[in-house]
Image (cartoon, rainbow, N blue to C red):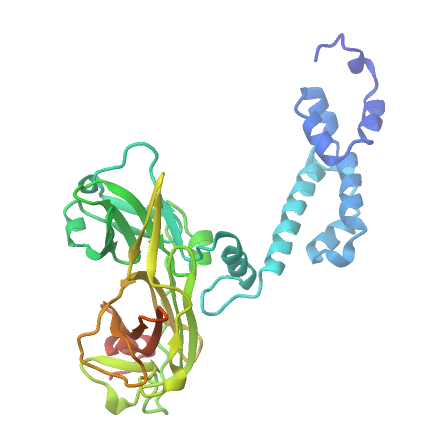
Length: 397
């Protein structure tokens, strides 16, 4: 703005009086016009008035730090230029954050997510456990992939040859599914080495901490707690478990069940494993029919398909102190049960979902009714490595 501008000839008091009729957004926009207007639009008296108008009449809705600012009696003219402008925007941000934290403070102990967030994700995305990554244009060759990284959750370093050792989950006429532990599925075009899509299956527990406290430079590391030692109870660490397990695909939830007061007697420890039975084959009332078919629908650009007998499993096992002992998030596949077990209460084919890693195993026995096309869970057993129990509780089983 040149010195010949009529606006520059007006006293600054008159210009500030004119600016006093503007709101915060207009003042902020006007401050980018020229250096003169930037200085005038950052006047502490203007922003102090806006601050009091915005927050002074809503003290009951404000937290204590804002009430202290409202009561502040410092002469605004003695402060640096733009002080109350900066304070106004900072307070607006703090209030918004306070409002969201208050709205989301009820946390689901099974997932680690605020209940409102979990409900909203379920309602809007209908894909509450997975993130699918696709490439536009040409897809990379599988042998040229060296690492997969999802910010805020976990980094999975892969060598080019290491991908050959990935587990085969399922296939349809277009793609084959390769499972990379933990919880990463790579869809490969049949008879090719090209990647069709990559899906990350996210276990909810600690997801907020990983996303908010971690970064691409410094990953979130869960603090290692000291084992809880109890010399009074001879079977400490073998009882009081809470299990939450869900089966789902990329579109809907198939099963979601919780089981409390699970236990294992000391005499029942076998082969380095602790057995927790959630659904017994002998308890007909506990058998659970599934609400959907076990299948994995996928989409890649204009193509889509469905892989049968494949779904996701998310599992959280909490101890008697409501602390996580074992968390699983992985794709699983349905296979024929070759154990020879027969239940005369059901007519149909018997299947098994068997997941295993270094910390434990999960076995889910199902019966498929061909006439009604319904799967029923007739057995659910979780096995935890005794070494993991000893590390968690400080015991020596």
